[in-house]
Image (cartoon, rainbow, N blue to C red; front, side, top):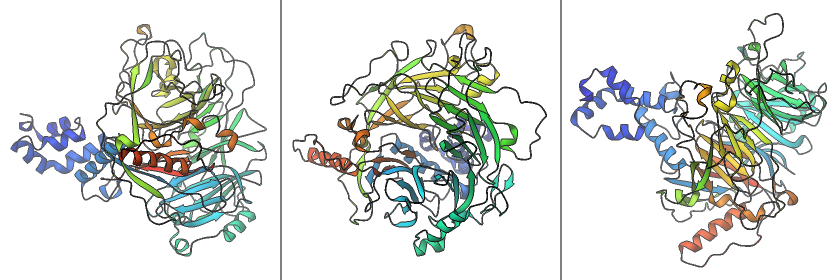
Length: 611
């Protein structure tokens, strides 16, 4: 009956189906099969757009795919198989890279899996900054530990940012991109910034570039190579405490001016604006909070930054502030009106406000996952060690269920072996924007995740308590990442657990703002179909509280479209795989005591097998 309607109406109806249903529908009748033959390009193109596999108006040749594809149907199939693996119902490959020589632990890293690159950029405790290939861990390029400050790195759109030992921030650019046209805030980017500009690279940057060891073949192709682009002098703000890069903007806070964040154009190195990050305690200024809320009049220290193309978020222990950036921060040619801009700072206070609905994570064991296969280690000693596993071996599944009480009242289950002193005090630890910049999540030490959906509605008068859902993870949190995919977040807890939280696929289909008189009743829950997965082999509760005192910086995480990357001890990963092998053979297994090397290395879970 459906396929007797006009083709445009049929296509509109089919756009609401899940991709798995589309692949099966054509087998139901001859009419369906004939319609799919005639309109296959349109059907699967709109499916790819609706399910956010590609952006609208993206050509097939420019579409990102986990493997080479021949048409839109093939692209959709590849993404469906990839999502199947991410959800724990397929297979995955997990492994890690052993530490090289005396480089020490990985302090900060970024994986660049773009075409022609596929490299890992890592800042280590004793080895400086290195760029290595993902396939065989071969060194392509490096900066010495005497040159790079051992703090952290940020990478965005081919630009590498790190703190200079000369009291400033350095921005380097991928050598392969230097000749390619690129716009930042509507203006062309020139690398390096021309001599005469205050942000032009310094002589010591050029000297470091000339002395940097480089692989000859990589130097010819530009793979993994970086060149000086900009130097940002931060002397006016003092030593940099926090910085965050989201091309084309970079924001930083200095130790001498903790109440102000400077926003910089990464293309030119010019300062764009200065944002006051401390919320004003005056009544009526706390947008997003009820009239009864008052910002405590005290000196607060920012502990984290988040940056999108339109907003800057500053996280302190007692409050999270979100400031809309001025129009000229987005477009260098925008007209700057005379007089001060209207106040656009949002204040997100107590994440456990009583009116916020709460959900909790609970373990479950009823997921039909693929069974693991025998480990297949890579024979090359310089390459990463990996093993192919089924989803049930990679993840332990957790369901998201409504809480029986207010947020924060549920008691966290303490795993055996966690020291009694490993208890957290309340307070925010971090805040993150979604990759599309529409949503905000704030995390607390007590394990609460507060999701403010379409948070910009608070600029028009909505209260955060009416647009926020709270998830109680029941574990004290340490870090949150929201990378690439709007549908997934990564969580790391103080108990050395790592979770992947998958949100409802229909989270953007929000209902109109409800009447505040109705409270939370009847509001759509975007977390209603969410679920969480704990990485089995990257958990070791015996390390909780011990890692910090023994210099094991298991803090870095990153999600790319096809893999999850994190810093972990390869020796502990090897132990976990060994226990599974012995259990598969029917041997008695027991958790080994100790065995940690004390070195944090780059490890991964790759979700491309079978795609």
